Image 1: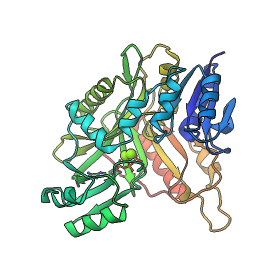
Image 2: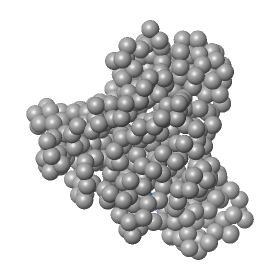
Image 3: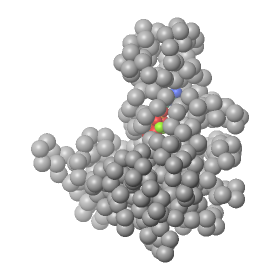
Image 4: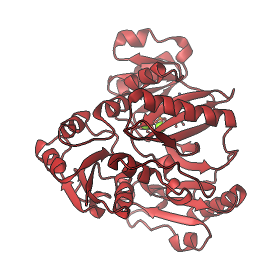
Length: 381
Ligand code: ATP
Ligand code: MG
Ligand code: MG
C-alpha cells in the first residue's frame, strides 16, 4: 500500500492519520516531539527537526506523497521534499500563509477585502501610521496563533510600547473592526483545479482562541456566507493551491465581509465535519494528497463544536479529567481527545461535536454539555 507523509505531529496530523489509515494508507509523521499526538498513532514516526536533511531524506524515502499540518513548518523543508515527492500544499503557498504581510497582499491581489492595516517594520513606518487605524490590533507578521503575538492598542503611545514589547519584529497593525460575527470556509482543491468546500462555519472566539463553531442553516446571513465561499475559492485559485485550505472572515456590523487570515491545512473550525458530514476535512486532505476524486461533502446533521481547553482539567497539582461519563450520557455527543497529557490553560486538549435532528435540539444539547463541563455558555444568532 501507499504511504502518506505529514509534516507535524499535532492533533491535526493525528486526525489526518486516522482518515488516511481508514482508507488503507500507511502513514509517516515527522515531528520534533517523540510523544506527538500524531506520531503515536502513525505507522512511521520520524522524530526530529523539520529542517534536518537526514529526516527529510528519510520521509521522502518512506512516503509517496507529503502534506503538512503544522502552520510553521519551514517552507524550505517542503521545497526539499518536493524535489523527490509530490508535496501538497506547496512551499510557496505555505510561506505566504505564514506571513501576514504576504498573506494580506495575496488577498488584495485576489480582490478580497481585508481590514485596513499598515505594515510596521521600522520606526519610520511606526511614525507614519494613520490615526484612522487606532484603536487597532498589532500582530506579529509571523508565528502567531491562538491570539499569541498580538496586542490591542488604543493610542500612538500604546502602539510604540506594543511594538517594543513584541520585540520590534515585522508586524501588521490592523484597525479594530466592529464585528457582528466571525466565520470560516474550508475548501479542498485538487491538482486538476477542481474545488469542493464545506458549508460556511460560524466561529466564536474567547481570549483570541476558538471556543465554539456552529454550522446549520441560517447561522450566518446568506449574503455573507455566499461571499465567504466565493472569496475562499478566489484565494485558493490565486495560489494555485492543492490541498485543504481554511480562510477566516469577519462579518461586520454593516453586513459586509472582510477576510482575516488563512491556514494552509485543515482547521479547528472544520472539526465538526468528522461527525456531521459524509466527507470530513481530513478525508478531503487525504483525497487531495492521494490524487483521488473530490466528492462534494454533504452535511447530514446540524452541528456545534465545543473546544476542550486545558482549563477544563481542573485542580492544581493533580488535574482532574472532566466528567466524560455525564457528557457521553447525553444524546448526540462525539468526543475527541488528542492524547495530550499536559493540560495547560488555553491548550487544545480535544473537542466535542454535538449533533441532533434540528438546530434547536443541537443548541439545547450543547448548552447542557457546557453546563456539565463548566464551559461558559454561548449565545449566537
Ligand atoms: P488563529 O489561532 O486563528 O490562527 P491568530 O492568533 O492568528 O488566531 P487572529 O485570527 O488574527 O489570531 O485573531 C484572533 C481573534 O482576534 C479573531 O478571531 C478576532 O476575534 C479578533 N480580531 C483579530 N483581528 C481583529 C480586528 N482587526 N478587529 C476585530 N477583532 C479582531
Ligand atoms: Mg492565525
Ligand atoms: Mg485566526
